[in-house]
Length: 88
Image 1 (cartoon, rainbow, N blue to C red):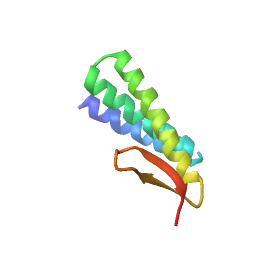
Image 2 (spheres, rainbow, N blue to C red; image 1 turned 180 degrees about the vertical axis):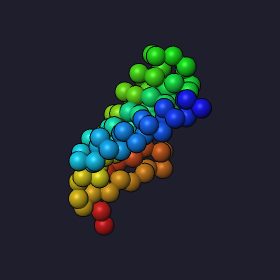
Image 3 (spheres, rainbow, N blue to C red; image 1 turned 60 degrees about the horizontal axis):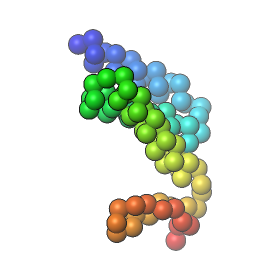
Image 4 (cartoon, helix red, strand yellow; image 1 turned 120 degrees about the vertical axis):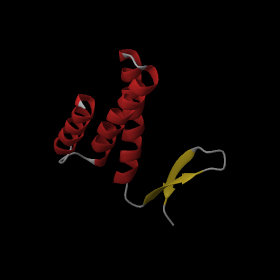
């Protein structure tokens, strides 16, 4: 279908576009695309898509930034929140 083809083209374009980016930039881009897709699937309108892209972009940037900090790991607390500290 046309929708499936558009998604494939978008994914391929994103992978080429972010090839030279930092982990933070890659995380933000992938998070924004993923968030936009989830927002569209849940809300089905432009506002939901934009909110999903913003939330996904921020989350992706945070995760990507953690990957750039050598010697640091992400840990999960019992309550589900995460924090970053030096790896053992």
